[in-house]
Image (cartoon, rainbow, N blue to C red; front, side):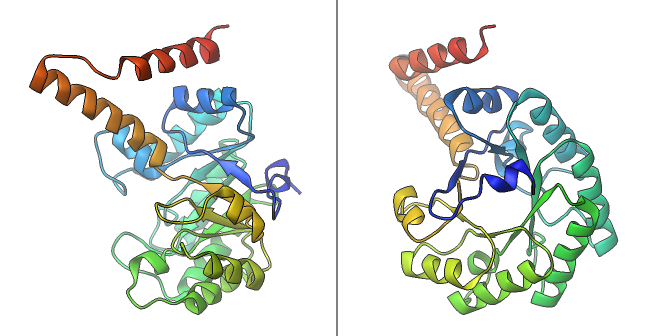
Length: 260
């Protein structure tokens, strides 16, 4: 069993921040996080693109940089596997494992449509085949977010199929009702990752129902960009510079994390 998978403890969840560049990765590690995961949307923003606009080669190069920069396990957001076919998904995960990543996720949505449950499970199996035994494959069910009318039972059925296909961790980013999340945890025989979302339960509540991993997606990246937007608008509109206290804290954190 990999050291990364060992960090997934139901009831004592791995808190997994999502860095978007080398600096944020090193900062999160300095702050005490035990593992990291890339964010497709946050990384895309660093390239001046929206989520879904990154190529496989770019995502893998980015992952390789973060692995080299960090001293903790790194998992990668590999979107839908960057391939239309199962063979392409297998190759993506083979290449991902070769970067030194501890794991990676695969979605059941390709940016335009949700795969059927059978298609998605076959793609998860293809990812597992390419990744090898020491790479943690996380299978993500996006149908709850993308498809109107999707129910808790639909999410459970998909995640159970992905677990049977070999995924070591399953990811349900859609549900925000604690009873729904508890039902997923109870029904799926794998560690469950939940995305923190506005209006949803917090980490302690998620721990209480057996969640094994909690992540934030692009939230930190866009929080940072939001602070920049606020400061820039103040400069443009008032000619003043706010946010100096926030900037001071950021500068102090950088000096503490990056000074040899």
